Amino acid sequence: MKPEKIGLNSKVIELGVWTRPSSGEVENGDSYLVKTHDDFVVIGVTDGLGHGKEASLAGRIAMDCMDSNSCDSLISIFQHCHEALKSTRGAVMSLASFHTTTNTMAWLGVGNIAGVLIRASVSPVPQRETILLRGGVVGLQLPQLYATEMSVSTGDTLIFATDGISRSFADNLNIQDSPQRIADRIGSQFWTSTDDALVVVARYRGRSNAKYSA
Image (cartoon, rainbow, N blue to C red):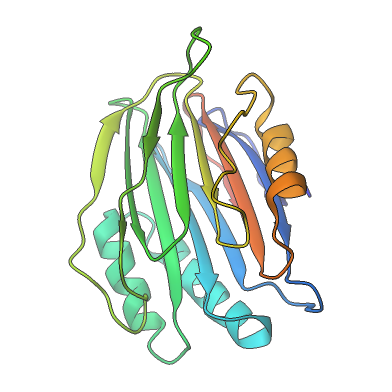
């Protein structure tokens, strides 16, 4: 499933998205948003607790809050979303930001949305980084927050996957594939079908000014 693209004119990242609601459900509680500013881009993925309408509502509120506060630090975005989600069943969430002036990426996760950064490499087994997830639920119980920052290079690929995707999703990927092809492969092969599922693949490229949303 290809992402909706709004005002697309970006060389910061190349994006691929695959998403499905849980079997028997119409609404999807898993949401994403990517927002690009002059020298950085923020990527957010959220999973509203449970399934159906209430989970979808929590996801939309979280992404609207991230959209409104995307110029803030990742920790501040989490804090704003925590306040906004207190009237909902809550959500788990992972965020990342790519900074083009320093070629760095910061990321932070609360809950169980997996994150993997696969380095661009000519070696048969590319180097990987894995997000450090903190226990908690945004809107219900927010833990002490710490963002991790690292250097990135052109071609490095970030993958976020919600818990409707089997945790072995990053095994044996062809990192030379396009982000959309990677997302489609992960979704088709690793979706459990018993939960909402979302895969977001972002390959670091460069600079621009654009916005994607789901």
